[in-house]
Structures are given as structure tokens and as C-alpha cells.
Image (tube, one colour):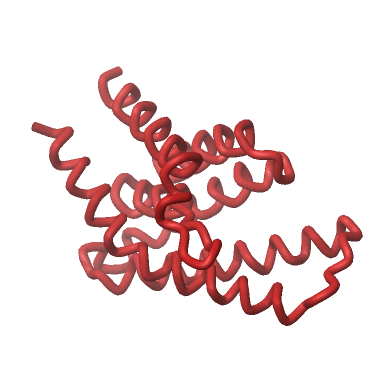
Length: 162
């Protein structure tokens, strides 16, 4: 029961950081995706089941608070947590390169899926090069913020075990 409460508090804290504090970390109107980094962290640290659960509930809370396409965050963060957890046993998870590669891959996949979703919903992109350059900016910025966020999450996790 204590573990469940710890995960619930962590999920609520991450969603609160994403919806309020990420504006302060924005760089040229590109906001970091703290929730994706948290889902990847949960999967790599606690396994596939914890990654899926953390991703699902983090995505659910984000979708309830955003006006974007409902269900996109649930679907994507669920899958990111599951894949990160599945890869957890196949690589050395204490490496700093593993979170960077996962973050770059998942951020790239998110941008591609978001672009396809916008296209399928018949939203006309008037300036495709601007959309692509903004997507690259988000991928690079979120990937660079992965390591500090991973160290912060790991520090909080260690502090919670005391």
C-alpha cells in the first residue's frame, strides 16, 4: 500500500510540474516533456508493469488537464513506459547513454505520431518546414533535459526509500 501511495504522489507531482513549472523551463516556446521522461524512468527503474502503470496514469491526468486530442498522452506514455521496461533487462541501465537514446527515440516517435494525427484530422499545415524545425527543436531540447531529470528522479527515489 505504501508503494502505491508513493507512485501516486510521484505521478501527481510530475503532472503538476508538467502543467505548471514547465513554462519556466521553456526555450523559444519549446516546453520540456517531463511526463515522458518520468514514464521512461519508471520503466527503466521498476520494470515494464510499473512503466505501463505510471505512463497510463500520467497520460490520463495530462489528458484530463489538456485540451489536446484526448487519449494521445495515455496511449503514448503507456507505450513508452512499457517499451522502456521491456528494454530494461537487455541493457546496462546505469549508463547515461541509455536514457538519452530512449528519450531521443520516444520524442522522435511522438513528433511523428503527432504529425500523422494532425494530418489525419485534416488540419492543414500551411508551413511544413516550420513544423519540422519545431519538431527537431523539441526532440533535441527534451533529449538534453533527460539526464538532469533522470538524476532528479533517481535522487527523489533514493530519498523516498530512507
